[in-house]
Image (cartoon, rainbow, N blue to C red; front, side):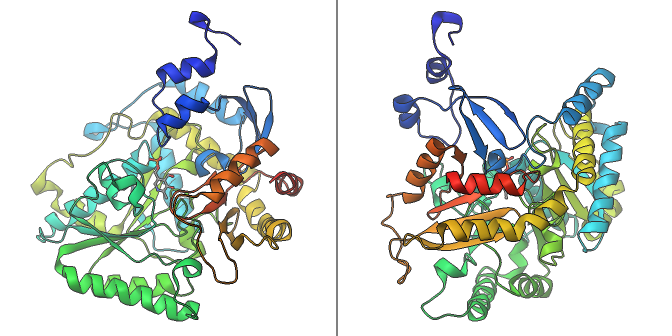
Length: 452
Ligand code: PLP
């Protein structure tokens, strides 16, 4: 197909688009991968080829592609009230209903203490920047101006705005940008398969991870640390499931040191783990929850932070004296995004997608193990709900890693595209990740694994 200036779309892309998280050299040499349409779990590329999207985009199209219900909700909202901000106490119906719905969902489905209020943003990264600013604000109001640092974990992914990049614990995102900033410190990555010592049990490894956290807090001084941020399951790092009792023990350390817990549920929220929230799956007790991606199934860029009573009561009590909370965005609580999020939650509930994720989880991991379990270059296959990681090693018996930069998982992901299935090659250690739409069927999982 040709376009203005008689160029193909691929050539126009090469001449005009600055791609995020991409090699400029690669795009200039090989051109972009252009996609044209999608329905359910299938994506169609510009050559007319259908691929099974086992990544749900970037872990975000939870309800699947092409849902008329969400397009209709969006069109209706645009006709009724195309924009409304929330500054200065302004509000609108869809946003009020969504905040109420999120608090209710969390209360009923996460098994954690109730959250007090919802703050809205537009992306996962800005949600984590909001959390970063909020814990500073909270401690300033409490008269603890030194208590500002945030502990994150090596291998974590929390986004790519300035504070969020710093919270991210993967060096590839830091170098060349002079990050992380000084108020972020990283503790050990709790991924037993790759980072345990020879013969170290999961329990002993978990003990060591908690001890590392305690050592870090002692080194920095608890009086300088505001919060600890963690994904319930580390996604981009490599689909790392927390070791048994890790979060329960971490929570005790946080409580003992008056440190808040920020749960980054940007991937795990809205059904990915087979429950509505990773908080429920792993019995977490967060003070702030960051949500995005599955909130709207990526039909609208929207994020949310739920904040606990503990934080809210400090903010509310101090408000008469400190005046306005000077943080927020033009699109915070956008009425169209709110309407899409409400319709998306309705759809996930009506079609039982969270239940589908839980029901298909055993079949999903069995399909992966049946197809890949004997491969000498695959060391570990792990999953929870509809989220899985396949880790590549040079020597399975010795768990030897491939030499840095060889990227076997990138080669496999490229071949998988040729075979008609999309997975992600992750940037921290050699892992292909799988996180299909929660609407996927058993037959589609089998078909994807046949193609992989
Ligand atoms: N946090 C987690 C756990 C994520 O996986 C992501 C994105 O992949 C983000 C934050 C950042 O979200 P966004 O890309 O919408 O800024």
